[in-house]
Image 1 (cartoon, helix red, strand yellow):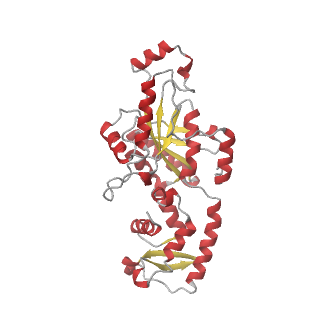
Image 2: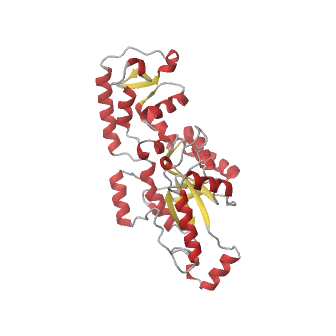
Image 3: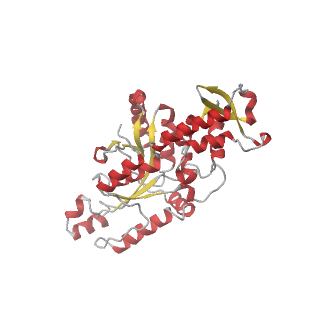
Length: 333
């Protein structure tokens, strides 16, 4: 997805002119950042593209509907009658200044993909999960008719092996492990995770039902959030509890200090949906299919022969994690 396509998609749903910052934030809330520029939106580049400075007037798709305190609010030329443009002066110079300031802010910001290593480490080490995980790159998945594949792919998928390093069953004799496995009392499980940087009332429903939609194949599905808007926190948590009771998607609060991360609401376990699982393997041959292939290889090897999961995400050690957090500017709340 290009910045132009991203801007159009956001404004088509917005219903009013938005600034570059608002378009940037809304795109992240909608998950469009995963489909643009390898999963990273550069807000200063977005502003430059929306300005369309090197495009003929008749070919432009956006215009400045109004200007407030140095910020330009863009709207679609195809719907210009709804918000006639106001007179502006030195628009291009002012916009370049705005984009420059936004670029400085962006240097210390982070996006959802920057949080993946934190979640992978938490899920690997937390005794409630003990998972090995893999990022699914949406931009590598096969494309279909518009809307058909929307909300199909989770951000991260995970697998639980009942005999991994952190499992409480690891201390048991091999025969006991086999018994538990054969009787189904301790089984392999598949997990789905949808990750959001910030959760507030305005994006809660969309975020939650995105997690519902892209986890229908898994034993357990979770919505993972880095921060919850302080002014809405009580209302957000109340609504999450209500939705959890109805739909069973769990909620994880991810912290920069990974050991402080916690499960706010547990997921409801269910049977794997085979048709949806098959669809994901077919539509994601680069990421999801290798995920399933390596799971099957490990299961085939048995309890005592762990294999190297080459396509899975690396679990960073503590030193590597601290460097990642610092490099990406991931701040504690």
